[in-house]
Image (spheres, rainbow, N blue to C red):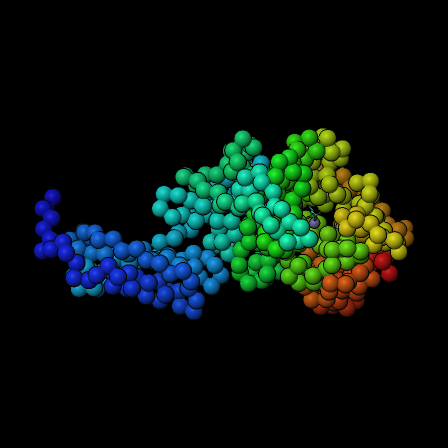
Amino acid sequence: SRAALALPSTTPEVSAPEAADLATNALRAANLGNRLRQVKAKPQLIVDALHGTPRLAWRTDAVALDSLGNPVARTVLTDARTGARIDAWDSIETATGDGRSLYSGTVPLETTQSGSSYQLKDPTRGNTYTGDAANKTDLCIFGICISRAPSTVFTDTDNHWGTGATGDRSSAAVDAQYGTDETWDYYKNVHGRNGIAGDGKGSYNRVHYGSNYNNAFWDDSCFCMTYGDGDGTTFGPLVALDVAGHEMSHGVTSKTAGLTYSGESGGLNEATSDILGTMVEWYANNPSDPGDYLIGEQIVRPGFGGTALRYMDKPSRDGSSADYWSSSVGNLDVHYSSGVANHFAYLLAEGSGAKVINGVSYNSPTYNGSTVTGIGHDKVGKIWYRALTVYMTSSTDYAGARTATLNAAKDLYGAGSAEYNAVAAAWSAVNVN
Ligand code: ASN
Ligand code: ZN
Ligand code: CA
């Protein structure tokens, strides 16, 4: 049945500023213990017919940034005659969508819904988001940035993102967002680390950086990850899971051991990103990108001349990386001196010799002719992470990494445990004694 709407008056007794104050107070009360910034409220006069007899009301949206810089919002319904609260609710909502990625199939995505628009921003992971760099580049000199490519957050109208092909700019964004989701979850669920800095705060990805840009990188100054599209001949878009895990792990290293990016510590910095990026790939357990001990196997194209950027079982397979420690290894580029630690991690996980894992063939040699027996990748990730975050410092070299990982293995599994002995044997097998 329909009844005519009769209101005693359409003039509010409660003023708009009063309604705004009530709503911002409600927003503060809903975020107790959080210092809110940029608090703003917008009251609109409406007729509320959903809570009993229709009445004149203020519908006020109050928004702010919380202490982590994350947006918070609350909508408050106030009786415009008495000032009584009729109802209130959080009005930025987490939505679950999905995306068709370039390399990882169709993946779930947690996104931010405001009204009829979705943002590729994940409130369940510290508001980690992915933005479009619009094919622009940063202009930085001596680490000081004069201008920066944008990071315009991707938006969508139906919360189904990308097409699985590069024609849709959102597809690469799906990969990057998924990659940092899995990396977030790996650190949180395996190591109890809440975000890169351990403070629960998310970072962001920029995709479509530059033009034909054949790299991806972590940048301490924006605390963010950036990915090129590749030139299509050497590399495709550099947004694969292990690459995202590699770049985000540079942030973790930066916030923990702080390994200096040159000499042996630089090789350990790079190896940390390869090792933990590989652990992310195993953790994700995605059938479109099964776990392996290769870096960048999804992004290389025929013009690159190899099946991966780097090979952990025998790093020299790339033509440049070191398989074993020598006194000159610190003179190599950090992406080649990393080989010693990558090789250590492979041997510790899988052991020496020839084997096929998830359809990929490996054949890992040892310096001293020893046979090494692996302890599995999960334990390697635990030992390396603890060594990185508890024992390594900015100047740790290969000898120091041996000590750090032995200390970590002692903490986790006990002195003289099989794991402890395997760590010692794997380092000796790469000539770190
Ligand atoms: N992709 C490279 C890396 O993350 C970029 C660089 O050379 N720093 O290591
Ligand atoms: Zn790196
Ligand atoms: Ca890989």
